[in-house]
Length: 520
Ligand code: ICS
Image 1: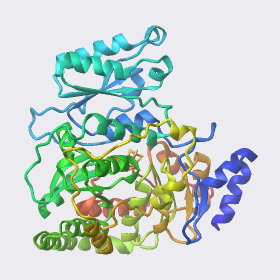
Image 2 (image 1 turned 90 degrees about the vertical axis):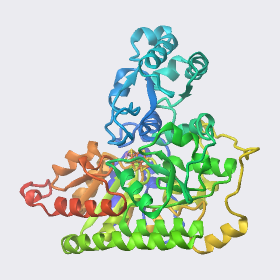
Image 3 (image 1 turned 45 degrees about the vertical axis):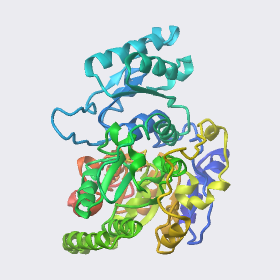
């Protein structure tokens, strides 16, 4: 009984802690709306799975772009631990094309810089990196000490931009700036909007031009989506930011539709682009074969073009034949099994689709740093309380561009498409898709995780590397949904097949029977 589970867990906490955790743990009664406490500070002493604001900005949003030099102003550790561990892949068009992704750039801040200031060292590093690599653009990322000692990365960026004549921009994404990675996403979105998007008005060729927002090419997911889009005849103007280049960002405003995969990390850019350039957006999901087919149909619907709709149907039929074959083999071995998913801000929702295709149910799920809208849907945004931590992050005031604002659809067209289910500007969140009795846990603590496993013995637990071996030592397989455990892609149709096979292998291997779990 999930209510009993919650009671047991809270009983172990000091009173104040229990009171706070009580609001972050929900037993879904099948009714909406239902309020959860999210995007608030983790409790000191609790082992959280969260990362920092710098991670969300440098690692998540900007990290996957191959030709911006991401220069980290800070101690070397911050760079080292952000060095490709996320498995965001990239494919330069030729071996000679710019690709800085496998480098690790840092000012390597020392004690003396903390005492006397690090701006000179930063300038020197910018000049040095420019001398060696001659990049089109440099981003400067702030780590915790930068904010503490007061180095002005924006002033340095302005000065160096002037001196070197390339686009250089700074991010005030100090690790402590927000309560999690999520603040870093917002800061990255703001900077992209201010300094990059809209700098190049030349539109690529193509009849159906879209931007893919919130897809980061983990394990090659973006490659699979590129394959599908090309097959359908869709032109991908830009990707934020899996397998992307800065040129893509600069001309993103020439697209006619923004589709969002990860709502949490990039919804700000989508909203700002709609206000500034008139590009509408809707949420898609390419995790799960059925979800992918649905998303493709909605994109085709948007362009209101019979030729495109026919082509999309052809592609879906072709791809689904292979998917169906794969699922038929695996399904008898996976159906009825139980999964639990605890990942950042999107995947704990999206991957429930793939599990349900396998006939598996999600007994418990939660985000590390999602906001209430990611759980409850965007309709609750006006009611979200702004606290000191969220006020810390700048909210840009955006206006329609004087010359380039061009609504892609009239209000009537939008209404008509909405009636067909396009869902512009909407996201219903994770809870709407979860069953009655499911346990929804925000910012799960390590203790809560152990208690979930001990009591429910799920067939598979999905989280990250910090959790992986603790869980597996309890005799339960753990699938990393951040890095995909060296596997993937899992997006789109071929990705779904990969996922079915990997999950089948993980939950049905006999190794788990050889481990003595603590409850045995
Ligand atoms: Fe979005 Mo790990 Fe994404 Fe999500 Fe985000 Fe992170 Fe990763 Fe996770 C992410 S952007 S890095 S879908 S690719 S910060 S897996 S919210 S935590 S669930």
